[in-house]
Length: 242
Image (tube, rainbow, N blue to C red; front, side, top):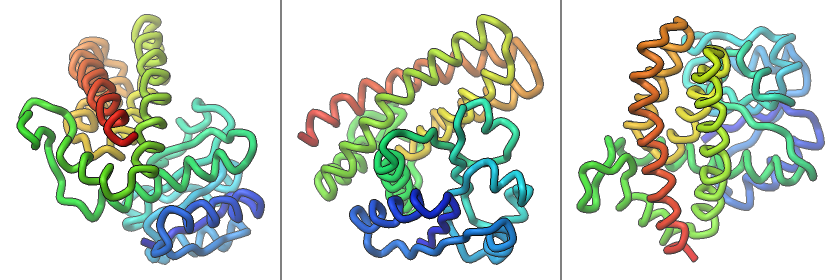
């Protein structure tokens, strides 16, 4: 995996150290100006780019077809700021900077694992109705217990927040808020390779962008119990990783 860091000197250094700690095979490069970032995104060399919203605004984020395989992870001060960009994921800065770096490194390492693992629609390991591939996650726990523990903890922290935002948005017909919450749930569930959750979240995001209340309700009725089932499952897996 080739990683591009364009998040400023301090965060770039912290992320590079954190990534090296979890996966030394990830190649890291940096971009310090808008011109360097634009050239790097167009080059097609990178799998993931970590970029602050301000710099990406200067560049003008290319659409997915124009940036090849590169995923954009946006660093934003507020979740609502991510809506203006066609980014694949976003993180909110934490204090100290090492916390943000560790979260980014964890997500990047799991993205690599997800890309290298065959896709699963859910439910191996004796439970075809499960939204997660429990057997694959159990294997990852055995291989990298500390990494998986961090991944599970991030999901357990973030997914309930996104569900609360989603319910509030649905209740107030705040379609941009629904779209943001659904987009985030698609990305966080994607790190666990949960195709049922990702598919439901993408449907909800599309419905919210169309401001279609009936389609939003239908998609939310699929997504919410799916995410709740994932939360239960990874809570169990987290205890097994200990």
